[in-house]
Length: 147
Image (tube, rainbow, N blue to C red; front, side, top):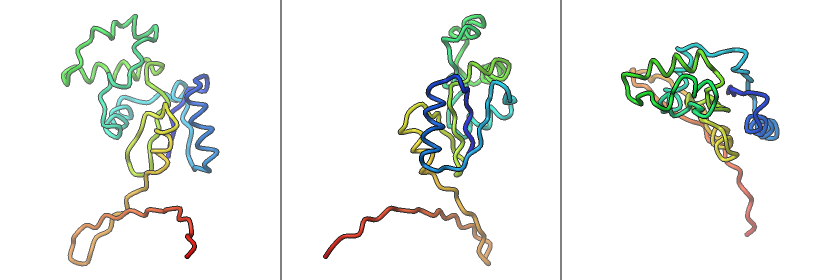
């Protein structure tokens, strides 16, 4: 699990505190210092299931300077948006958690952080007959009942 943060952001600090409180294993990426490439942004967008304009902070001064509010929000403009996010990483909504199952979430709420924590990696294997088997391990907390 990796979390993209800006340490000055209260939502990022809250997400990190919750990950720590839950004992999660994760890597911190300070994305303003370790700027994601366009390919990395594309990969995270694919994991999020979102478009670049969905994770753009349009109220930032750089967004206003670029006139992002007037940019088309369509497939043909996707590359332009991604290039802007890479060139101006402060425009990327934060925090973003890439979960162990290959998905990602914009973790601005406690609920979304817990969602990322609950995602389990898929285990892939192949049977002797060549069929792919996908399984997931789910752990539950069971409360014993008295009879």
